[in-house]
Image 1 (tube, rainbow, N blue to C red):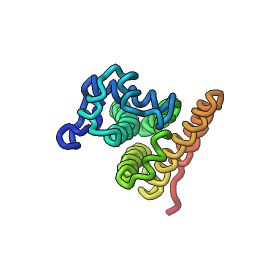
Image 2: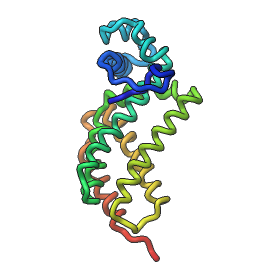
Image 3: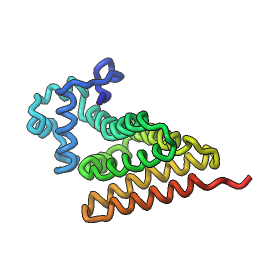
Image 4: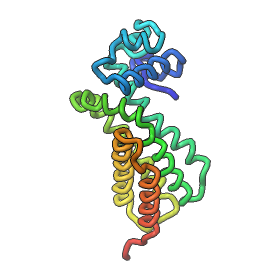
Length: 205
């Protein structure tokens, strides 16, 4: 997985083992201890990498936060793209979409890290714009998957269904993060049935 870093004046990507160890350590700190504990010293101790390397790869704590957002959002979409590229049949693509979303929302540690970042994102105009762009990409990927092989619904309605799809992932992730005894699997089976039933409908002429 590639993530944005300060390399190439903030427009590069890094796949180095060092950068990924720093990011993974930061995610663990966020998930287990919270944003207030995300310090350079904590990252150094958790990752085993010198804190100077955080500055080298990410520029600052703010730069690290931006890379974390990229990592948390884009890795999910990339995994879905790879899986969908292997499937041609439209219904099976939808099933694969929902199954991948189920796996994403079961990653309660990843979502805890994301929600630790969220208040800081919402207070920063640039981070909000980055997050909005990431959500737009996720909705478009879902819309394209839902649209494949059917003509019964407009792009507008499919876009709305894609927005609901993203919301379901996050809503169920929060519930599962709070209670691993929650019926996560059964709820996704119902969601899949609802989506497929909707897609089978034909809009009135």
